[in-house]
Structure formats: C-alpha cells, structure tokens
Image 1 (spheres, rainbow, N blue to C red):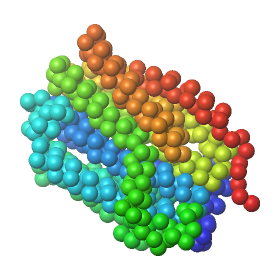
Image 2 (cartoon, rainbow, N blue to C red):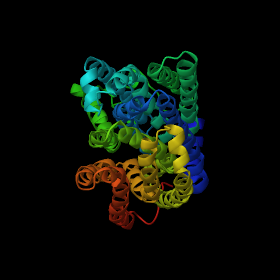
Image 3 (tube, one colour):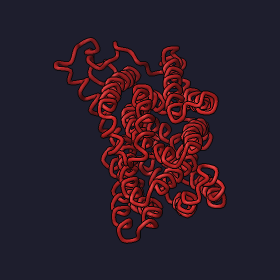
Length: 474
C-alpha cells in the first residue's frame, strides 16, 4: 500500500467511531444544508414573481429529483463497492468502479438532457404543471436540462469522495456551487431582472462550477480512486484473486458488464429513493392542482423546508456509510454495529432539535417564502405535521444506508421504496379523495411514520445475524 492509502486505511478502521462519523458527517451535513438552502432561496426569489411561478419551482423540483436519482444511483452504487474494496485492499479494482461509474453516468445524463429538451412541454405537464404554471415551468426546466451532465456527474463524484472517506473534499465542491447559486439568484433576478430565467441560469452555472471543482480533486490526485479510460474494466486486475491475469482482456467485455451491473444493482436503492421522490412530487402536484396553484405552492414550500431540516440527520447518516462499508469489507463487524447505533441515536437527537424549531417557526417560514394568505393557511399545518414525522425518519434512513453500504441491495431497495412510494403514493391517492386537502397535507407525515416502523424488524434480524466478533487478518 502507498503511504497515503495506508494512512487512510488506518483512519477508517481504527479511529474511534463517534469522532470518525462526525468528521465525515459534518462536512456532508454542511454540503446538504447549503444545497437545500439554495433550493429554498430559489423558491423565495421566484416567489416574488407570483404564486404560479412559485408553483413552477415545485413542479421542476420533480425533474431535478430525477436527475439526482440517476446521479445517486451511479454514485452510491460505485461508492458502496469502492468502500468495501478499499477495506479489502483491492485498490485497482476500486479504480475500475470509479471510472466506469463516471463515464457511463456522463453518457446517460447527456442523453437525458437532450431527450428532455425535445419533449419539454409534455414533460412539464407530466410533472404537474397547470396552464398558468406551464410558461414558468418550461423556462426553468430548460435550464435544468442543460445542466443535466453537471448535476448527474456531480452526484457521482460527491458520493465517491464520501465513500472513500474524503467528505471534506466533497463539501468544498458542493458548498461552492450552492453559494454561487444564491449569489447568481440575486444577480440575475434582482440585478438584471431576468425573472425565472435568472433562477434557472444561476442554477445551471453553479452546477457546472461545482462539478468542475469536484473533478479537480480527482485530477490533482487527491484521492485513491480516479476517472481514467485506462481503468475502464475490460481487464481484470491481478489483486481480485485471479492470479497472473492482470493484462488479459475479458472476452466480450464481461467484466465491464458485471462492473456496471454491480453499480446499478447496489445503486438501485438510491434510484428508487430519489426517483420515487420525483414520482411522488408529480402525484402530489396532480392531486393538489385540483385545489389551485396555492396548494401546489404551499406543498412545494413544505417540501423544500423539510428537506433542509432533514438534511441535518441525513448528513450524519451519510458520514456513517463509508465507515460501515469500509469496515464491513475489512471484516471489523463491531465497528459496523457501533457505527449504526451511534448514528441512529445522534441523528435522532439532532433532528429533534431542528424539528422543534420548524414547528414553532412554521408561520414565519411560510410567510417569508410566499406572502400569500391562501398559501400560508395550507403550508403551516402541513409543515408542523411534517416536523413531527421527522422523528421517525432516522430509523428508515439509517436502515436503508446500512444495507446499501454493505451491498445488501434487495433489502436496501425495499427500504428505499417505502417513504415516497409504497407508503406515500397509496396514502395520498386515498386520502385526497376521502379527506380532501387535509389528506394531501398529511399523507407524507403518515408515510414517514409507517416507513420507520416497517424498518425495525429488518434491522433486528440483521444485527442478530451479524458476527459478534471481528475477523481481522493478523
């Protein structure tokens, strides 16, 4: 092992669990808070135009969730494999995963952006646009689609850095992009009076700058993994357990297909989680538009604010993922167990404080985001209900992260479907018809409670079967 690799290995397998998770989780939390903050700022700036424009941000948020879903699928899928391979000291194989994930994701994102631009109006209507929201949504969505390559590959690079244990590097790229987006909103919308086009342009430019900063970490060799065509997995590295075939091509690209297949399989929970978030946004908007643009705008505000609150607990949880994957690969099971319970306890305590602040601050937040009595009347009770439900979310999220980080793709995928899919979609469809607008307002909180409770038996079974002692090479 190189000195840098040996130092990182020692850190990931020996540093005390609480300090290690916080060291990796705090930069991730800051990154997520800034990312969600500029989404909230976008909503605030656009809300100054009018209620229909504010509704457009909620509609296009579904499109952004689709692009992020693809990025997280490749990023988490590669990252989970990479952390376990680095824990098992298979560096060259880890580099094959990083290279394959980056180039395949880049190709997919270019195709998605081009297809979306060709079908812009039908796409916006599918996402939930009303006739009054559509003109704003088309403008905003066009810029988001132009930014697709940067958004997708940015997610890939961010997650590979995190799984490698380089969360601080990921933070630099994401925070820079987020702050530039906020500054761009002020410049283009207030200074140049570009309206919603200014919000879209600010987002597009900040995404490309953020992706360039993240890429520079790899190009400057600050990481163990790389993005290099020579590491595309068409040749099996000798360290994978197959002797003396490091220079032998694998017929028909079988290794490439198996590598990409493993990325997609392990990354599927992220695609489901983010993708269903987009689908749930479309379903929610479709149900809410019956009650007018104010309902769509209000639920958009609730979603943005709760994502900002939730990212605190989620960021700490994402600090746990590389610790879990790395130590599972190194067969240090006591650290996997200890890391999970520390993350669950710390995340629940922290998110409780933010949920409390959200409860009492709901009227002020709603008024700041959109000073429309009709919007505020819907947003305040919905936001308060969501703050209560946040207390159950660490259970389902930590379970999902635990299983994905160690490659249990089936369980992780099932967990990923719960919050925005299997629990939420039936609830919002049924309750919107039987309870009207309150059914729309309270469907997501109820879904969060159910998702947390369903996760418990899966966790109990897993920790009963996890070896009680480490299996460390001597």
